Amino acid sequence: MGLKRYGLPAFIATLIVTLVFCISLTPFDNQPTFWRVLIEGIVYYVGVALVEEVYLRGLLQNLLEDCFENSQNAVLYAILITSFLFGFGHVFGALGQPLGTIICKTVWAMALGVYLGSVYVKTRNLWVPIVLHFVIDLCGIPFCFSTSNQYPQIALVTSLVAYVLLGIYGLSLLKN
Image 1 (cartoon, rainbow, N blue to C red):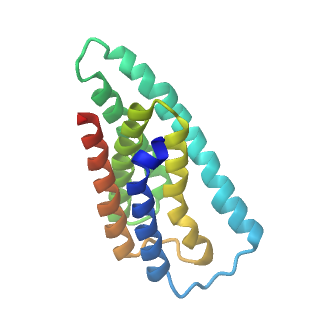
Image 2 (cartoon, rainbow, N blue to C red):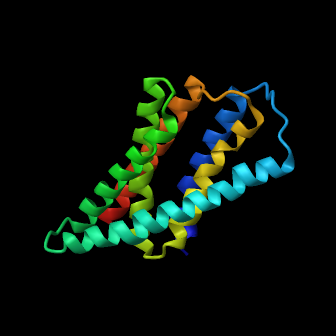
């Protein structure tokens, strides 16, 4: 139920961002093996989604909600703090990139944290944000087919807009 109810925006955003990556990274100048795509793409993304969501949403967000239980904004505070940590956790993967890329990746990761945290609050089912996180991460698959390690400008902007909109959608879920 949670994926059907809250997942469509993530699927649409992922489709758009993946399409922009495919277009902006062409020509694809790398021919990875099936196993490289499977291991570096799919298996890696499953592991990342599982670990990050269990730690941030399953453990930390619940712990913070309990810490702020006397506040009427306990859920919001917990989501914002975990989203901040989620965003800054992605800085390390962007080191060596231009400053604009680091800022964009940090901001969009924070926004995705708000979305994933809000979906978790609405469903109280950790598998929903795990699956959505995995789906969103799939937009990185085109990098397996490119020797570029730089984000094309249009892909940065598209990702930033798409994921900030997901974060806003996540905040709107908390009002309902």
